[in-house]
Image (cartoon, rainbow, N blue to C red; front, side, top):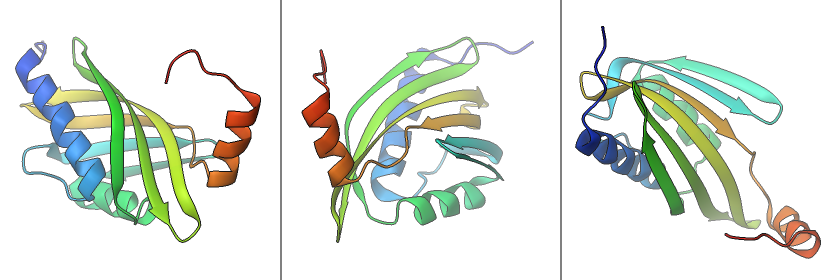
Length: 138
């Protein structure tokens, strides 16, 4: 039977994952050698096995480095849930996305991650959203 990960390690893994998002480089100890990524996009789904493939997908989909202005982590009985937002810039301007990751932890590292992404919002999409929607909180 699996035991719940240590709450301090859950927070540390969330911080390491946010660092990964900002740098496109996986910190040591973040992923198991056989980590499974199951990435759901608005109209596509990808899966990878191992840290190398996971990092390669990340670098292809987000080659420009950016920021993670907001994130929240909640421990689960098998790992963590991480809600986060990303922003980055390229020649077309400043981009944005919101994501949610449910991760299983084994031996103190992420062994499986299911990531759900809103898709990348272009500057035009963000402007249309701002004109048409008033959010109650950021």
